[in-house]
Structure formats: C-alpha cells, structure tokens
Amino acid sequence: MLFETQNEIDIRERSPLALAFVGDGVYELLVRAREVEHTRLTPNKLHSMAVRFVSAKGQFTALKLIEPMLTEEEQNIVRRGHNASKATVAKNASPEEYRGSTALEALFGYLYLEGRNDRILELFDFIWNAQSEENAK
Image 1 (tube, rainbow, N blue to C red):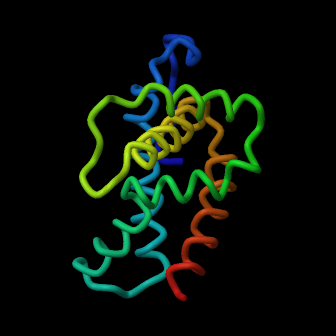
Image 2: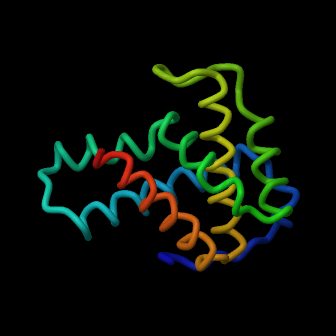
C-alpha cells in the first residue's frame, strides 16, 4: 500500500466514523488507480466512472457483494460502521445506502490501519470485477 501506519491508539478504540474517514480515501484511491491502469478515458469520463464505484449507492452495492466473504471480525466493523452513520444522508442515496457506504468505508479504513493490505486488495478485486461486469451490461 501507499503508506505504512503506526497506530498509537488501539484500533478497536477508534470511532467507526474515524475509520470511515480513512477508508473513504483508501477506497477512492483504489478506484482511481484501477481506472487509470485499465482504461484510456478522459478525465471527465474517469470521474463519471469513478462515481459509480465511490457513490453511496456504489459502495452499498459493493458491501452487499462482499458480505458473504467477511470474517466475524470484519462483520463487527461493518456493523459498527453501519450503526454509526450520521442522521444526514448524501443526496441521491437512501438512508440505508448511506449507512452501508459508511460501513464499507469503515471496513476499508480498519483494514488499512491494521496493515492488512492483502485483504484490502482481495476484497477490492472482487468488487471491481463484479461491478465492472455489471456496468458492462
């Protein structure tokens, strides 16, 4: 991954919204890098394609795809992230989609801060392949 982290606070004591804050950046960077690696789109089209993945709806869909693959520990992080979402929601997303997107971001933030980059890539590859196939239809 891009950087190695040194946690001074036990990761289990971190707020799920703090984990989501980190996970949002991790997930978006993965999407952007993958797009540039596999396409020759213009910046405007790159942005449009990225929105399909990083929007609340896209992240909610991604979470549903990987839920059967999650360990008990990962399910607990997802549950915490889902329950921690603020009362406000993103425009163009239902409250359930917004909570699901926060849960996915919390998971990616947690895995990143734990240094579990292989797991991040395993989950992201699965999401990318499944959503790319769906978007091609």
